[in-house]
Length: 201
Image (tube, rainbow, N blue to C red):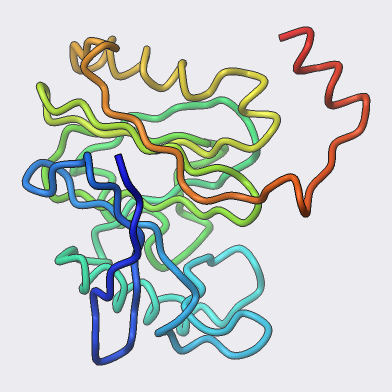
């Protein structure tokens, strides 16, 4: 599997990261970059988060641009209130638009979303933490998890796969998984209290 940046909108110069092993005919996916949006400093420019103090109108336009470049409708996206936990939520067509324009109506206190609804965009936000993308090609189901250190200690990736197994009949051995860009050891060092929790887990 390889990860590459592709220009998906030459007008706005929007780039997106893609994993070669994820078949696009089953699930469109992407990892956004910072260029090509309308947000002003310090969020410049393609900020997709409604929870960081950016102008909501700018975030809405950024989401519209990015998702349109992927062939998706930003008004239909589903996004959670991420809390560094282990809660996983199955979402469907009735959830379309939750968190699209207002953080207040996002899926509450959730760090992973799963669905088997075609064309339903899922959006999670990451800064230092690790994006975990999951695809079950046999059942045409997807999952995305927020892998911060707390979620990783609590095994959020494995729990998301197991939830997909319960909800969709996913066989773990069929799942394609990708780990997105995140902070590295050059810029992030944990203390003994965090190390101890990983050892205990």
